Length: 148
Ligand SMILES: [Zn+2]
Image (tube, rainbow, N blue to C red; front, side, top):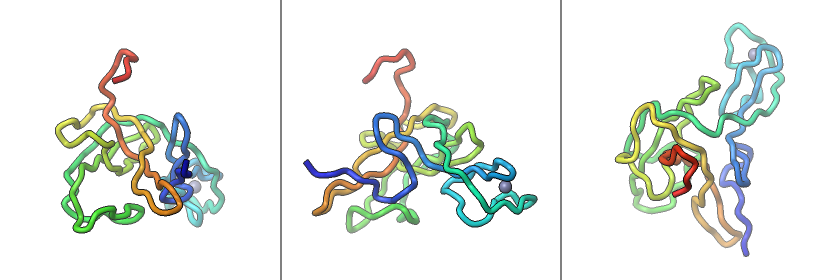
């Protein structure tokens, strides 16, 4: 069996309950994603030291779109020519909005603004050294604990 490793290092954790990795400013507590490593995003803060924090695994859909253009890094095109897919901007309890592709098998028809989604890690592509994974947003449809 080949190893599955993140396509982008240090952006998310893997395992049964994956989470995005953000940073928390040691001076003011401002949380950033992607991780901040140089200067605090808070203009009133001069903090330059940060701790890694795992962000909420669930959030609500803030906006979504069919991606008709090639997204910026860390998205890695897996098809040539580029094939559009659904992208969701998800608001987390931390106050951040995090863009991500929608989980395999879901599209814009499964998304509504304000609906809950959950972070999942799926295979982005496979090369000779194994699978490369990326986070995606999966609509939460089963509210009673039933797994589809
Ligand atoms: Zn700060």
